[in-house]
Image (cartoon, rainbow, N blue to C red):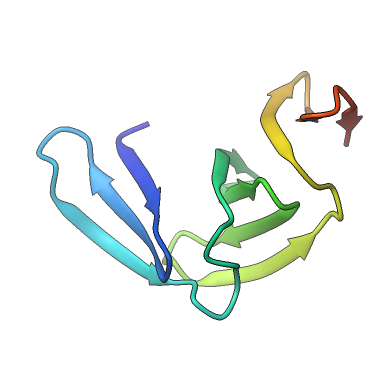
Length: 99
């Protein structure tokens, strides 16, 4: 709740909301396509899960190391949210997946 995450072609940049300073940069050049977009970030089991519009999820540990990259094989994701311990993924086609 205290940072903004920005994805560009090669990096995920983590900025402090209060002072605007970059406090961490993570190279994702080999993990994601340049055109992918960050849809949402959720904390699950004390790990940061970054959901991309192309169906990839990057799981980041507290030390900012990447634990895993998962491809859920869902394309055109427009919204990801959590409700009652379930994850809801909405697509441009109006399909909602529940995990």
